Length: 202
Ligand code: MN3
Image (cartoon, rainbow, N blue to C red; front, side, top):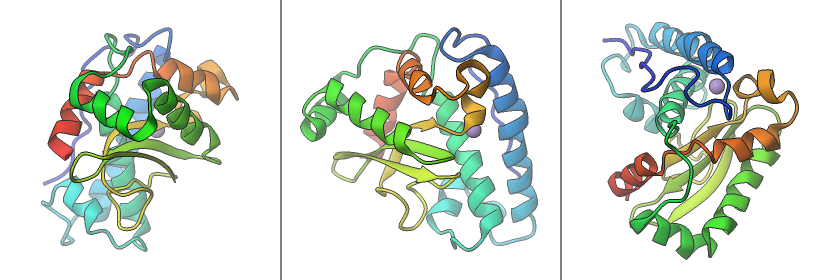
């Protein structure tokens, strides 16, 4: 069994003007495809073959850099595409909104904290909103293609929202202006999808 590059649920240009079509196309068809192919090559014939990506990452030996980098890259981008939507933006409601308010005090305070985590991640990496068992949410950032499912990485828990802050995610449109990309990302967050992941993860 091998992992497949998922199809996007929307067109490459569907997230414009927030994320441009060319960036989306290269990011999905080249970068994510590359992680997928290299992950498959790294696990072929090993004990990982046939396991779910979550199972692989949770039980990962962090010294296995091929699976760490490419398995992380495969999982992280799957999540990233799905938590964005042309109909996104706004704020969460229901249980997720309550959990965010309980931890951060308000949605605006959460937005500041998440933006800060994404903006201050030095070099390449990701910022996450994760849910812990019981429903508490937490923000962290991780380098490269690491994520909190991996042993002793970031805040732990299950990622329910993630932003890619590698330059390949924004450089064509925003150049060095990562903060502008982070602000724009909030206009495409699919809070229904994040809420559904919160409900499953808690
Ligand atoms: Mn990327």
